[in-house]
Amino acid sequence: MKLGQHFLINNSVARKIVAALEIKSNDVVIEIGAGHGELTAALNYELRIKNNGKIIAIEKDKKLIAQLQKRFAAGKNIKIIEGDVLKILQDLCSRFQDLSFKIVGNIPYYLTGYLLRLISELKQKPALCVFTVQKEVAERITASPPRMNKLAASVQFWANPEIIGFIPKENFMPAPKVDSAIIKLIPHTKKTTTIISQLYLNSSEINYYKTINVLFRQPRKTILNNLRTVNNELKIMKEEIVKKLAEIGINPQARPQNLSVGDIVKIANCFINELKS
Image (tube, rainbow, N blue to C red):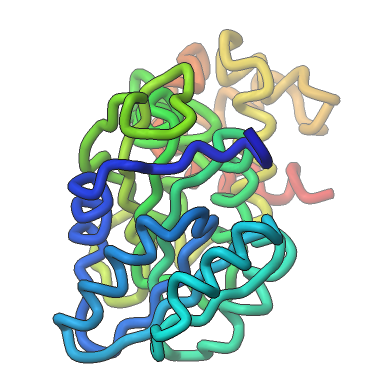
C-alpha cells in the first residue's frame, strides 16, 4: 500500500459523501487524494446535474496521476494536480479570495490531524469540508464534555463537526484494520450566530492554541495543576490562578475533558497576559 492509501470501492458510499457536500451550481470542489478517481467520478456526475462547477483533484502518486488524466481526459471541468496537499493547499485556497469553495477527500489516517490544522490556518476557509477518516478519530473530533480532548478542542474552535455516517473497512481496497467515518466540518463565519463562532471571531487564535496545549498536555491532571506546572507557563501564584478561574466560572479542580470550547476561550482570554510568550 503506497502513501498509506485505502481506496474507496463502494459507489453508494461515494454518492453519500458527495451528497454531504451540498453541491450547488458553480461550486468549486477541491478533492484531496483523488486515488483511482472513484470519488472524482461521483463529484463530476453531481456537478453535471447542477449545471456547472469545477473539480480540482490533488494526487501525490505519479502513476495515479497518469491514470486520472486518462480517465478524465474529456472532463472539461476537472483539473488534475500532482502534488503534496500539505505543501500546496494554502497557496491553492488563497487564489479563491472571496469565492466559495469546498474540500473533500478520503484522508490517510496519518495525515488527518496535520491537515485539519492546516485548514484551520487558511485565511480563506472553505464553505464546508467532508472527509473520510478513521472512525475513532471522527469520534474524537466530535467529542463534547465530559469527553473533550485536544483534537476536538482544536477543530471545534474554527468549525462545527458532524459525523454523517460510518463506513465498514470492507468498503476499501486494500481494507484497513479499522472502520471509517464520514465527517462534515462547517467553519464558523461572521454570518453564523452561534456562541462558539463569535468567541472564535473575537479571540486570539494563537493564544487559544497555546492554552489547549497547556491544558491537554497532561489531561488527567486538574485544570489548576496544568496551569501551574506545565513549564512554569504562568508567573502568578496558585491563589491568583484559583481566583481568576473563579471569576470566569471555571472549577480549578475539574479536568480538561470537562471543558467546552467556550470555557477554553474564557481561560485563554483570562490568562492572555501570562500565556503570551
